[in-house]
Image (cartoon, rainbow, N blue to C red; front, side):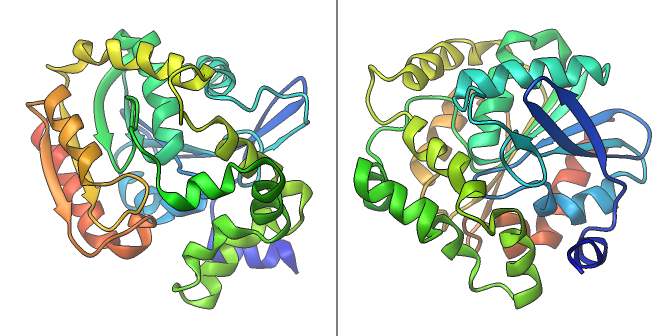
Length: 284
């Protein structure tokens, strides 16, 4: 029954990349210039299903689940940190022989993707930036601070599945699809590790790495880029959008006033149109 549900809501061929203690699930559809899609937390590649369907008509579209997210798996000894995710992304994309790619960056996955870009700038053709950050975020929202309280945060994220509450306004089938990979407490452990690793203080390991990524953003000032920003996102707000505009002053910018954390669900048609127009305009 579970497989039947997946085939109904996410009807793409499932591919797998295995390395030591991880198994990465990814969709690889179409032919042409590659588009690599990085998902936010607690989302997974399912969020990109409409983009995959549309853009794979004339591009090679790769949407993968970070280890421990979506249909990908990882043992507890995996490095569930920003650095660990960037490292495995390097290994994964090298195995797929991805060159001169357009990166679609969203949420924490977007930070991972930009970390990859800074390490491999010659491998980047263009950037599609959804709500994400690649610089120190400043003050954190109260709800994230609460989830970082050691004894309380684990209970809220792992036991009570707090991070998935944001998709309850979607229809049941869509909400069930986002929930699908996280039905057990064990499967929600990587979500809590995300909360722990989010760069809240300058001395944290992830904050140090983000400062290194931030220092490399200048390399992309002339790279074709489009920013599509959900203005109702509680985590990645208009403040971060202003910072992106400073670092990438030549980027095309579109604001989606009614879209929130789940930008792919809140404004799917506009998102597809803006990205497709950008790709056509830049002959990508």
